[in-house]
Image (cartoon, rainbow, N blue to C red; front, top):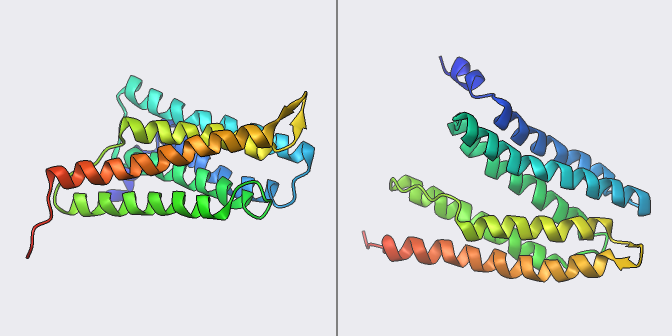
Length: 190
């Protein structure tokens, strides 16, 4: 009975991943025309929801409830939430479109690589560098969402500095996945 096994996988960690997915449309609405106050509220919500990324993994490992659904939902939730935030910041002039395009392209390429690897029976898990990439993206997005100056801090400038770090880590980790995969699984001609 597939439905009962799916229901059995709807535990607290997986529910937290679903919360992250559900937060993406809320972020879209909040970032449609944010002023100073709405930008801060959006950043706080984004940051709080991002904490669930750490929390769901911690709970799943601690309680020993790692599921196939969780392995699917966790990275999907991250990608949906983070790419939504980046895309919504483009028309606000807070991030360059070309950086967002390359970062999303990296996500699509790595997902494609994982699909190819899975087809030949190889599972590509998240690398440490990939995790650093996600953390860097979150650290750049929070101040970019805030955007305005508060208490003498230029949040846009701070976010832009973190964005450069996140961009480098994103591209580097993407190349790292491909290099490691093709070193251990060279292309074979048919």
